[in-house]
Image 1 (cartoon, helix red, strand yellow):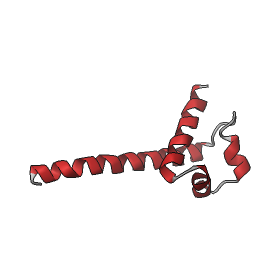
Image 2 (image 1 turned 60 degrees about the vertical axis):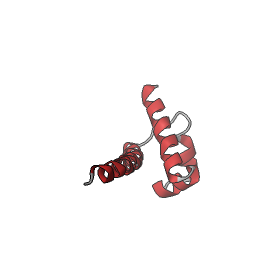
Image 3 (image 1 turned 90 degrees about the vertical axis):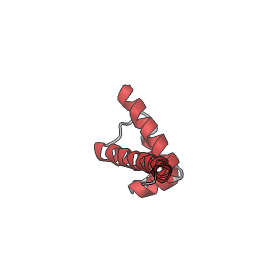
Image 4 (image 1 turned 180 degrees about the vertical axis):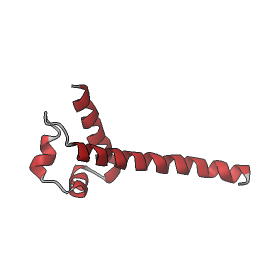
Length: 77
């Protein structure tokens, strides 16, 4: 149950980052049937979950860099 919740949250967040469910599905290169099944009770394949984590992590890295850039400018670096 907890794992499914984590998978669902990762799917939703990655879709937000990519621009929607269809865009995420296309980027992952999976069929619509398979993609939709992940929003049900079917667990994500490990490689798909890791790809979602990668999408989310890259977005968070961009957020951190954009936050740090003004600080560097203010500090004169």
